[in-house]
Amino acid sequence: MCSSDLFRKLLAANGNFTWALVGCAVDLIAENDGAAADADHQHVEADVNTAPEVNLKKRSPQPDVLRAPEPGSRVVVCHPGIIAKKMTIDPSTRDPFDIYRLLAGSITPRPIAFVSTVSADGVRNLAPYSFFTVASSNPPILAFAPMVRGGERPKKDTLVNIEATGEFVVNIVSEDFGEKMNLTSGEYPPDVDEFQVSGLTPVPSDVVKAPRVKEARVTMECKLHQLVPVSDELLGGTLVLGEVVRFHVQDDMINEICEIDPDKLNTIGRMGGPVYTRTKDRFEMIRPA
Image (cartoon, rainbow, N blue to C red):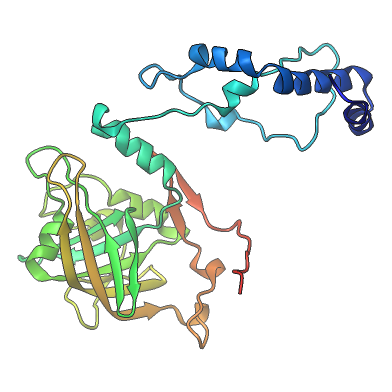
């Protein structure tokens, strides 16, 4: 039964007698309908093969308190059992592309390694990879994973070039040249220079033969540390570990203890599908001592 304290709180929050009663009804469902919820779960459990798509763009934020409905509107009370249900997926039973979408849509946002290489024949290559992170800071090791694609050339040109030369450069992507970065993500023959495709400017590196991207505010020259083959199957990949032998950072965005100004770097990140994110909306959380 709805307590008088709950009714008073709802009435005070909304100033609406009817909506306070609706709130009490929700409370009664949660308290007294547990057995029915278990039974209903058998009917509302999502089938992984027929689960409907969710349009995230149309979702509304969850209110902090119950709000009074607009006059003439219809109030729908959702069963609490439906809200709590989760889908369980066995990856061995699904298409690899489904699993790729699941991973790419869940592990977000992802930084982008914009990798420049040179082939054994001297052809420049430039391509973005969002399976990218730092593996160590002492020594400084970067990690990214080119995936196995379909077709006659399953191995990415980036990986072929690194295997041949043992060198590459990771360029950090800022929003102002994000569209040019995206142009390099197409599937081009190995004799195509993506610097020319994108209109980005190659500049010589200090240690490695691969050029840096002039427009990038931070670039890292790398020597191959290790290749870790993970899978030769479609959408499998190889983990590339490279030791940074030179950092190049724009002067006005780094201080004396090597802290980077995130506003001036203005990076973008990768979400699922063709969606990217900016990094301007930030907040701090101090680690416990």
